[in-house]
Length: 317
Image (tube, rainbow, N blue to C red; front, side, top):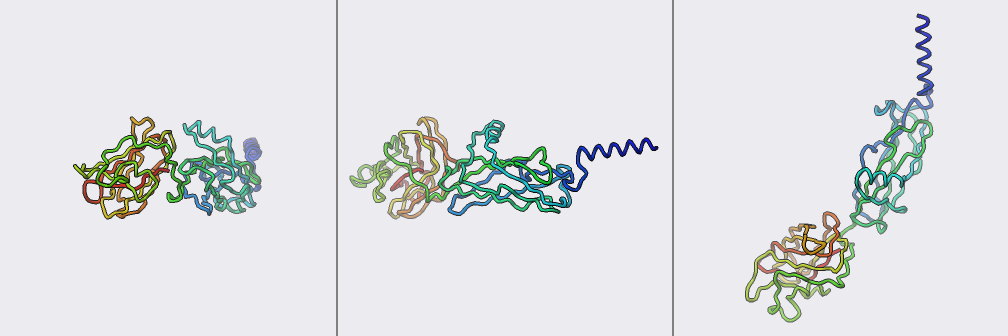
């Protein structure tokens, strides 16, 4: 019996040595609470920063949360970890760029208060306007650098933020139309609208009073009506805009924007419905996602009355 008791005491002492029996650490491990999966953050870039929060937690044993923390503060140092970008991209088959310095901030040190097992919300402040490309996803790995008063866990030490910023479409700058060519048009009115209107080219002349008009003299084709543009080089497109003719009807009601790299294979970039039913009115919208293209085609599938339609200006951004 005595030998058994001595053996039991010896085992318990060994456990204390290996895992710690003092109140100083409580056997508690520190990890980033939301680090199990990448955190997708979509935000609108404005003058004021966008705030995303996360927390750091304590578990004992992992992953069961401690019921009441430990009896002293735990300090946790945080850092951006650029080395994790390649690790993540390689594992996930992605090619995200690191969020540039100066476009974000977060505290380098936080505290889990005595008696707690989770920190207060940690603010990741994102101030990226003019510093990143709109609609492009960037990655920001934030890692636990050091822990005082407890132990770092063996996992969940890095949280990956996938950050995608957009801006209001009205703030987007149109691409230069220098070198653009209309290479195909379903129809155009070359006679009935006078010498400075009707032809497809007038939708790209920078004059909101001139316009492309589909044929109505000597025949009036029904929708769909399309116009195809070669921009001369491959560019990144994020959205589309057009200006309605300052006239009392027949404006586009629905349209599809298609894009192509070679002029042969086409993909739908966006479908737009409920377009403006008013003259001299601009429509401007982002595509669901940015695309690379040399060619784009606007196809008007329905209009507000009549078979023909007209457009004053066409732009992309």
